[in-house]
Image (tube, rainbow, N blue to C red; front, side, top):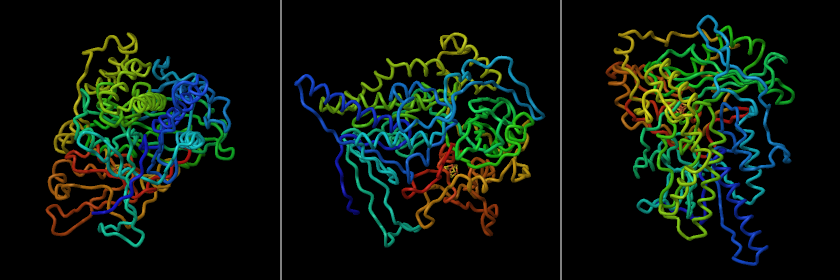
Length: 572
Ligand code: SF4
């Protein structure tokens, strides 16, 4: 048995995104406030709880990607003086103009009014990885021990109680044998473990399944694919926010696109963010979000924003779209779930950063109070759920609770449902107060069923021009993705035989299409039933988790690779 060092903490935060960092910063603020009150009143005792935060990326922000137009409500609550702080918060531009467009293949038109959920005046265009780096600096100033490059490989449990996190081992070769530089991952023991590992995290997935924490609906996800461009000055005003609907997605596929003017960043370059979200509950087994983004950029209403420019960065991530009724139970013995891991996202507004931060703050308050009482059992951590229910974040999530589910009856029905919800402040939804849904992969149709009916194949080759449109490998290069090559594959296919047999026949190996980073390939292989075998190019993986979510047989398990591996996002 491998010997592992154990380090003791009061609070261990897993994940250095906005939710995890908000947890850490707010916890440190609560400690400061408590001690200041003790000093002033002369009553009680000062405390010095130990808190640490781990992040799988080599540096904070390198794996953080978002749309991202940020509602400042979360940051206002966390750091009320952020607008005048030094170093300055890295917001790119305040939104000054926004509109929505309906796209068709040949063009499109501007909506006469901007749908209220897509109004963004007063919000900020941000680069999430820059914002996260900035928050990380604040956390460190407050004495939080931040450990980048350390993935949480598994939760340590005693029965239902989470007692810590085991870090990933380093220095294991691709056959699972220790190399000369082998280092066993230590255990960070914590009285409270705050899981902030993002969308479809491997620890959260296991915990939800083991402890039956599922919400009323299974979580449904979307995948966001995004590029950042440098374009000629004047082509897209800083703070301009454009949302798109329609083309290239069909009427049974949830999603939409965006173009955001980021303004001058990176040494005076004029930057634009362009991206597309595709619901991971689509029917078409050949759906490819990367390809859909390339098609969207060819649209005559979108292409002019990018003409004469250069694509600088690419990234992809999944996002929890299921809403309030898909949130798991977010507390238990010794643990709390925050941010995307908790499913706090407003898919109607395409916003989650403010909610992620707010959930982190409420988790910090709960953890602090539990430690003060000396009780971190579920009977005490339930206070987190109560705090969320009493907070503005619950009101916001309640208003859009059925938004995504409404689209399961098609785009028109979804838009009508969303319109009703908006008109009546969430009080009246079109069909039901609590729309049901299934897990996203169950909506995918088999090839024969989809293409035998009205569906039309999408997988005809798109002739990427290398100027406006790119193939996946070029895009992966722009994501800065790197992994140690000689390590066990972090994409664990639990029944590989299925790939070259049933999956070929039934779904046509959709992993080749849904992975936005060309990780999965069907290679020719003599002697197999269909002459093909799955090849996994794991080093391309941008950690979006789409394969874990959308595999129709649910036999792909994304686990954390060696620390520091993955994309290296900048400006995304
Ligand atoms: Fe995303 Fe999976 Fe592809 Fe990695 S392998 S980029 S997690 S779909």
